[in-house]
Amino acid sequence: MISEYQLRILPQQAYNEQTVKDYIAHTYGLDIRTIHAVRVLKRSIDARQRQIFVNLSVRAYINELPADDEYVHTDYPNVEGRPPVVVVGAGPGGLFAALRLIELGFRPIVVERGKDVHSRKKDIARISREYSVDPESNYSFGEGGAGAYSDGKLYTRSKKRGNVDKILSVFCQHGASTAILSDAHPHIGTDRLPRVIENMRNTILRSGGEVHFETKMTGILIEKDRVAGIECEGGTAFRASAVILATGHSARDVYRWLYNNQIEIEAKGIAVGVRLEHPAELIDQIQYHNKNGRGRWLPAAEYSFVTQVDGRGVYSFCMCPGGFVVPAASGPEQVVVNGMSPSGRNGRWSNAGMVVELHPEDIAHQPPSPLLMMEFQEQLERLAWQQGGMRQTAPAQRMADFVKGKLSYDLPSSSYSPGLISSPLHFWLPEFIGQRLRKGFEQFGRQSHGFLTDEACVIGVETRTSSPVRILRDKETLQHIRIQGLFPCGEGAGYAGGIVSAAIDGERCAEKAAKLLQ
Image (cartoon, rainbow, N blue to C red; front, side):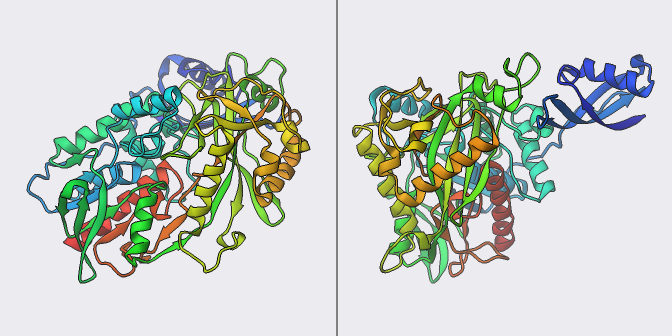
């Protein structure tokens, strides 16, 4: 017999399968020897009150054994000799597009400007050690995209639950922990995600697809409003009747090429702000209402804040419990910060982006330009670089000082490895960002006692929350509104907001490309 139960239990009771078995047997009057296995379907923590509970949806196998697999496997056939589809970019949108094309019997040719996921790690380390950024191999560019070395968070608000489950299953099939299938906020971890990405690449190659690293697209081949392939540096061209453009939110050269070649794009709203870092122990104490922190049974605490200030949203973004702040610039004369966590989430600090919603009309510009928001990002990143001493040192300020509008004479210790420099962010951030952040922090401090503190550090700037440009496409066919066979895809095209949503969009674009070619 298979039975499902909705449990609300103490953290120590949810600790492992055996303690959950014990609870079910005691509560429902079962002989524990008959419960052969328990699988957690969904898991979330309720920390709203002083007594913390864990909510579990579980499936108990009573007097029978569970099925071998916890997730649905996907078969990938050999596609050698099949019609090609060029996929530009090896982030989640591009990788999942390539895998879905193989399922449908088409041969993906993946073209990635950066290096493979392991080689790019050396270039990322060089940013902190030498303060130099390789414009083709960094936290944004390379196999796995911006998500490979920024946490691997798999939470999405997408309502396409079937698609989300498929994406999570594909991750599990390629080496991710099956815990992502049940956690309310699934997370692979920066330390584990590269291996999963490498396994995906091996599936593509084993099935007859191609993956080309350090191959930068310089233009799209268009013949009579139909795509014919792409051109790359060095004169290499890849010909195909369908191109999936999944270049990520930081490929500014791609946006400029589209604009200069009269390919329809538009400016898109973004969110801009700072990265806020607290001691992890303090966040644990606040969120779990306990001076002793999380204790033995609970994970590093998360938080989520959102409010409206002067008609614009102010909210936390990409919260990284037990994580660290990283330098995420993708070119010279930029300081950009982001956050990530290892799978154990056991670091000394916790951080989150704290950002303000911006619309194109918030930025004065005459005449209006589709590149308006991108150029604003660039200006702010250059300003942060200047404030940081014209290297990857980041401008920072104690949170309480930022709200009070005064310079910090010293800074708390930080996870940001290139180092921090005290700077009056309250003064040089544009007022429509800084003032809203200050009011937001005051409100969050009232909501959560102890959150607004001089132990926390405001680090600038967080600008790469989403694409500043939308590449216009048809709602039904997902092709560009004018160019047949060109499929703008994922975060970089303005149609996704994270790893899972980009992966879903990649699969959808692959399906539409296959339909076109059929």
